[in-house]
Length: 513
Image (cartoon, rainbow, N blue to C red; front, side, top):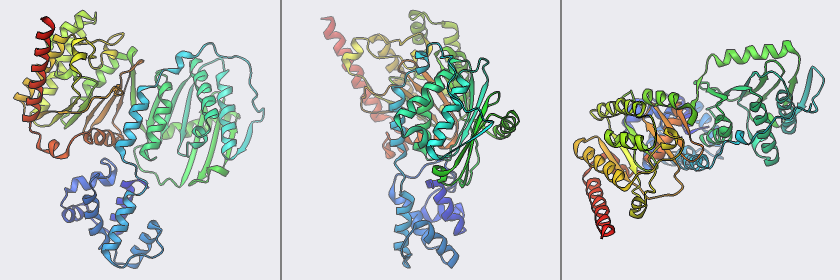
């Protein structure tokens, strides 16, 4: 169970309302609601959990309530003392919950190193692989699932006419990932399938824990970067008891399996070649897909216009914002400086300037009512002097990375200083320097998140699924001191920036001499 599911269980079994728990724990009722639905992740401060647990422990009065709690806590004896019971509840709420910020950080580190493996694909092998001739074949357990999936993909990879594959599974993914040899074989087959011009629509299971979900996206990322895969998700909760796998190639075959709980290790995996059966499963998938939403939109450097449109849509609504880039956000760059950089880099000044104008207007309007906090790592003075500081997202805007001249970087920093002095809702937070941060994370609370892989080849992910949005929001927020974030005073940041700009100016004078 996730933290949200555990809290929801405790509140349902004790018939506790959001407002009652909020009042007892000195929190806001809307915050409790977001915790229950997974829109906000588990609080990182222990006293908040303890406050909720103490109140909830006192609500277990009826025998059926105590029996239900006894079963989920898996205790030898249920404590009669409410304070001891609160400790057990707190421990259970935290149990098996790796810090979401660690999970997101690991995902981003892996994302930076991903390359587009589809570029390594040569001509597909047209030789006919071994494939069962039967209309229906049955394979059992984990090894059986691997065999069925391999036969399925091998057959699709040699079909002469491309088609759209339909993939869904809420069964565990360990059969695919835990054996490195099979994982490589599976990836190679998928690349061969895509190299044939086939497309894929996949429904991801977002009810998996965050780490498993992020691992699945990372595993699929090299394939996403081909632009041939559309990921979706079902937005409502499922009980996770009855599980199902549907791998369907409408013109070829289907692999279907069902299991209860974690029983997949002994489940039957059925490989169908019968056309009527495959058509029936195709209709089942399409009915389910109709209930789903896009999980993310994926943009490569060849899809700039789509990326620009998604960026404009993302920035329209009003919301508190956190952003971390490799250097400085393009939003805070003065327009004359942007036009200068576009011109010297050979980029389209009209398109870039027009987009920046719309974005900047939304940015200023949002500052009237909402906070915008930028996490900045000030580069070494020598890197600025040598022109080694990259312009944020320039890989997506251009054919390759673009770097600031020293004068351009100083001009951008001065504009940030003006924004800090002019708008109470604009803040920067200075963080340590890291050479591994080859990504941008741009989160708008309860709206969505944009994640840009800025190493080559660049890719931008646009996500609005609530649990993932909350995870990336909390990841960025974990880099901030909570008191600093809440206070939002710019005095210290202004002083640091002035000192840094003065040092840059002194270094420039020394170099001239």
